[in-house]
Length: 124
Image: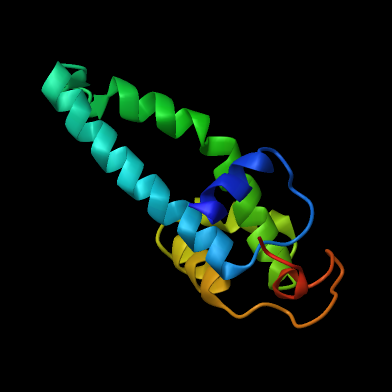
């Protein structure tokens, strides 16, 4: 939960670096929250079957859209890549796979063009 909150604290901060743990924990919590809200949407009747979306899960998804992009850009920075690589995701299938590979790659050791190594920072 610490990593999730850390991303939300840096809501629209597209500078610096984000380690793998921060990135993947953020998305794991998002999946759990969206799944839970989807169930609540169905139970309270806030799910539109014709549109295939629920009110609560949609509002939550919109709320974490910017932090999601920000942590992705910081994760790319951590691997030594520009945040503009996010745009490769618009290429169907291939773009998403390339981004997936970039996010699982190990961090650059030491300082790179985007900041100091986040694994060396004191994480509390």
